[in-house]
Length: 360
Ligand SMILES: [Fe+2]
Ligand SMILES: [Fe+2]
Figure 1 (cartoon, rainbow, N blue to C red):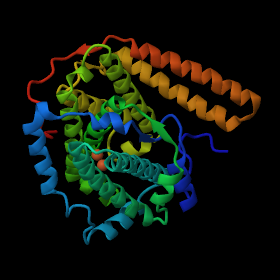
Figure 2 (figure 1 turned 45 degrees about the horizontal axis):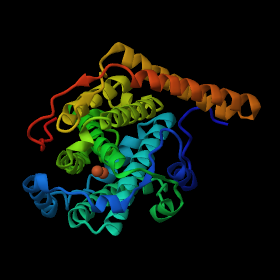
Figure 3 (figure 1 turned 180 degrees about the horizontal axis):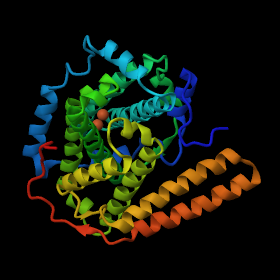
Figure 4 (figure 1 turned 90 degrees about the horizontal axis):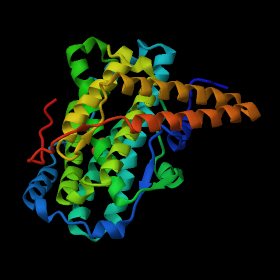
């Protein structure tokens, strides 16, 4: 059995299993309470909302997700330069990126089908349109290696997690904004070092991440229109989601350190840059931010990663000892997460203006 956290993806069956599989760090599928979403109002931000809807309607990326002539040759040359381990990390990256794009697509589509609130229905139509393009575009790159994911099957067989609407707003807002920060950080790095761009898909990231940025703006408007979501006891939920999203990303990225190295980035440095961008953006909604540059916070994340590695080893070992070790790891992870959660946070003044520009 393979003890490393990244399971090898050699066949389409492996790729599809990887996408369906659920664990602590893999992207999940969600469902929610549609009746409650029907009662949502965006009236307090009507002018900004309508402007945003017009942007979606204008669809400035409608022609973006098509390959150009240079794609195939660039792809072959780039992939030939990768070691087998690095190739595995890249395939893992493609599968997990596709799963999270498609997770958005499925959730937004479910909401669209099940709500009658016209504002929410219209928004979800646009979001699902964009995410389905994103997922489809990544799937083309997996098909180049005969590793295409059967999205219909994934939708039917993957486990769904129920989240109350407010958790959906916090979690999707963050994952859209962090998605933006991740893609733009990679794009800027490869813009400076085109020799490190080992796959053409990264050339698409700039306009792509503007979609993600705008998706995040939609949830920012929803939350600002309903300010009780951003006050009182809810700030503890915001802290929880911030930490859960940041910690998951940190652990997932550190299980594939070569991917970032190949781009001339170090996983830790890359993640902290992504956190800084995300934190700056969250001033539009969240009254609190995590102190990600605090050395104690960083030690906590390092420990979470070490525990997740030990957990993988324990799983690979199996048997009673393996199971006991997994139990110990789970307790340790919970303790570390708890300590990180109760670290002092940074209070921030919510910006008067909701909308922001993707200026990174
Ligand atoms: Fe997306
Ligand atoms: Fe998105």
